[in-house]
Length: 281
Image 1 (cartoon, rainbow, N blue to C red):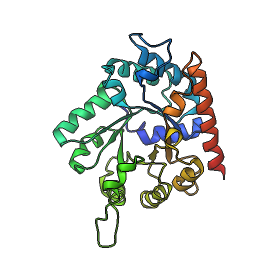
Image 2: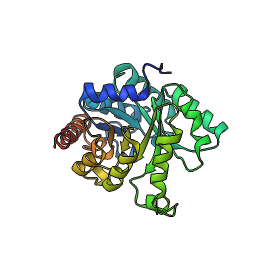
Image 3: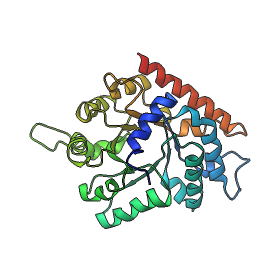
Image 4: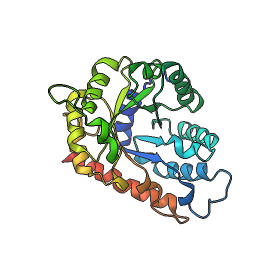
């Protein structure tokens, strides 16, 4: 468990500075898309993710394994092994467990133990739909990050997130942003998920939450525009900070051949550099 002097937000600040990157590589390992040389191996998922991590670690500010891709393949042990590898070799890079948990407090306490004690993640994504008592158990883990779904990148996110909930027409996602920034952030370790497919909404969230970190999925395979995303999510006077901009499939599956790790590095480098250029505009 992180000490108060090595919190998730401090890890991020250090990574943004030392790595010079806003890029997060997400691990969504689909067995059907693994290179032929790995298929059939008992630890194919671990080997695939490890090689890509080793090829991209100097280019990122965070890694984000997606829990379901491991659990559906009974590969939880490989996820544990992957995160141990990441923490041992790249302690400067925070690890976000993307599991989008959201359940009553007593259950959430077990999910927190799973994320932070079993897997050793530095942060977890959570769903706020059931309210603060479902998020509080994660906040009690000293120094650990809690990244709350706010404005997600999927098309159906608008079904609920854009509902007007007040006489002045405030949408639900902005209400979540206000709660996260003003009432819930007792640990100082909350961040928000805001999708790159909605840059106008990113800007609205940024205006509410100040310098709170934003995990931004949706570039790469989902088509989010890098320039628009960076411009919307930037913190005035603090370029190169404030955002964890995730790309998964565009990097993981840059090649299906034996050069998959090198191809992943090339894709990550191109994305990292594009984010840098956008930051400097």
